[in-house]
Length: 140
Image (cartoon, rainbow, N blue to C red):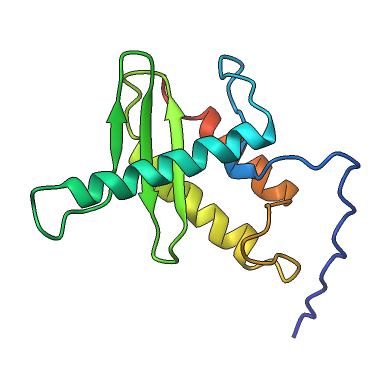
């Protein structure tokens, strides 16, 4: 049987980077600081909870998409309780598929990493690279 080896985690750069799920993958995206990204994620999470409570239909599903004239926002509530959000150009199609694929990458590269601790920023170069490739393939 082949032995599995685990690489020691690399040291973080002097300036902490934002979690991978909060990175800009488009040159057209607003350049937000880490605190601004966390504030946006918190606001979007709060909005999703409010919309679920306001729904006139009992047992309503969580917010899946929000479309505006200048952007499209898609959200995914995962089985593990994690929320994924993506903000894209208006009219971008297939964001639900992209979010599910991002969650699979998260499970494969982050959750299976023995050095990752839940509720901590994601510092996984392989996850970042695969997520970047996934998002680069999204038709615009």
